[in-house]
Amino acid sequence: MLTIYSNNHHLHHGTELKDGVLKPCVEMPSRADTVLARIKAVGLGDISAPHDYASSSYSPVHSERYVRFLENAWANWTGAGRSHDALPLIWPVRNLRSDIEPEHIDGKLGFYAMDAGVPITAGTWEAVRTSANLALTGMDAISKGAASVFALCRPPGHHAAAEYMGGYCYLNNAALAAQGFINQGAKRVAVIDVDYHHGNGTQSIFYDRADVLFISLHGDPKNSYPYFLGHRDECGSGAGTGFNHNYPLPHGTAWDSYRSALADACSKLAAYAPDAIVVSLGVDTFKDDPISQFKLENDDYLRMGEVIAGVGKPTLFVMEGGYMVDDIGVNAVNVLLGFEGRC
Image 1 (cartoon, rainbow, N blue to C red):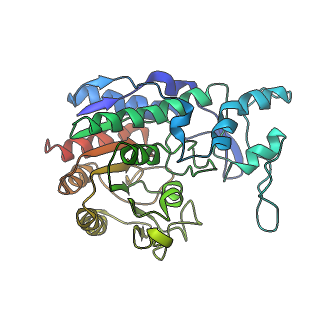
Image 2 (cartoon, rainbow, N blue to C red):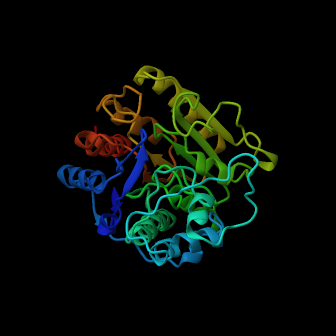
């Protein structure tokens, strides 16, 4: 399997407000480094650099003003006399106006963020755009005939929506790839998200569309981030009604229960008959992940890959979460090995 990778992810790492404390983000460069090392150790396949894409390639998934904000946020932040990581100060919650974009960077950060887990540093934009370009390059390879590709994206993307960042995510890599398939002539594309956390950004981007099916298996939002999307009754709207499926699962979910949900999800994928599948591959479902609550074992990820392969469609894997550094490489690559029947 071809892997698309860039060292540019090292340009981004900052602090987050978590558990009431400012601390280094658990979304760190060693995540991708560990996965890459495992790819090389098992001989998964060739490793290639991404192509470069203009910022206009990120529309219509993201608005032009949001992309412009990301491009200019660090300059605006330092222009206000700051040199430390940029984090939002205020959010437009209930009964505050959200229809007028603030001019000051403090207002912009809150306007375009859903949490305080999205620091912006001097290298963030270059890392973010490169991560998006990894997914787009993988999409292009599939469109040209590759059966499967792995985009080793960092930062991840599935919490980012059309006009907001959150959960370590800035541009929605999986959504950009799905839209790229449509732009290149695909009639139907499916996104299946197996990260522990609901792909709220991807859901919101495609919620009213029938040409992109979205399916997510995740921790129940009543008890797990992102808390405010991911419930079972969110089924799409307008033309998208019936094309959004959520599988919220309880804390402690192990492989037997997870496999049943995944099998049902994949039956929906097969019935939809997409031209291509994008997998938001998060492996924070692992039993020892520090910020998640599922109980999957290393070998379960081999089985996960096998189940997804059973749908029989060209498949792009896009890296999302997974924060147990000692095992993230094994688990992510096990999915890919299982998909290829190399168990």
